[in-house]
Length: 184
Image (tube, rainbow, N blue to C red):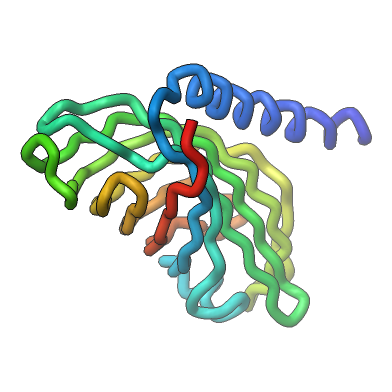
């Protein structure tokens, strides 16, 4: 049993390392910082058990783009919520393509992103049909619209899709703010 529990954690650690190491290696004159936001689950069952909005947090490089030149971007995001004995935690690492829509040197840079990755989902939720629980690794896909302000602040709206388990759908929208605090 202990070996079965270690496998998801090893895979999760490998996923995080695969996202963080390339980002650190490619970082040149970029800002890295925290992200905080609100997650709104699509599932009525999850909203009833855990509440309408949940905390979302993460970290990544604040996106700085050349006009109309897409680039690969790495990202990680976590969502968590507890309520009346039910709880859910999702840690997602993803990589994808980001396309900016701004002229060179613009102080405001809107962009669109599409990413895919892997998530660790830990859930124990009281539903109308009983308690559903599990710890799984799940594929993830997400798409985002965002705006970068002065190369240090990102405002982003993101929709995530994960696999369904035990009849629970974890998909939802995150509205988040990312601030570049550390320059490297």
